[in-house]
Image (cartoon, rainbow, N blue to C red; front, side, top):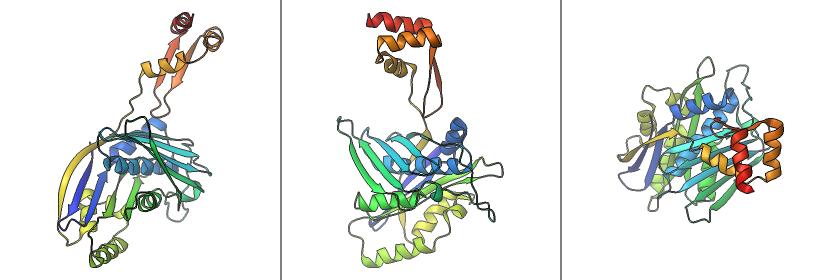
Length: 290
């Protein structure tokens, strides 16, 4: 099971979240059959949303839309405060690497666009905030969103590493935030540490990358762990929900499905699960409308 650890410096001036999201991203890759670049783009978006949802309280849900104008199209994710996240990418077939190093490319194929966060507190009035994409690499875009939209200076590092067969090897990341009361000396010390820290890829390749991330963030500064929470890929789609969507169609549309297609198949965008409705199911819907 994946996990997210919340921590705070002993001084109370900084907080950090570190994540192991390997199974989350591995499950997403399996469900959507994504190729290398699409896997990394989708995975980073899922991790980013796990961070955002962990920042909420109650039964809130957070939707992240990374809306680019290039090869990937849109990347959509929904996460809740119970550790669940789901998501999909419009173009699952982007597979581009640097010739010399084999590094998977993401940012250039996101293009220009926006990082959109919709927070649903369960009141019926979701709050939407939008910032421009600054790089398309997702981590930098999340940091910019947190700093600009939520007015909390933040550093973010997240990535997805693939094996020689382009399957998810490991995935995770961190978020570090400056809290009220931090001194200039402390801020400068942490800034220098973040600037000089090893690459997120090398940290994720450590035997215990959760511990490696915490060490890289705090260095010799003392900190305490506030909580350790389970996180996972989970889709809450149901047959009943899609049946409800079908019943919103007009009688003529349902009759056409029954007569011409002899049924209906609905595929969940978030997890790829297929739901079948046969002629009898459609006939019952038609009769209910009559």
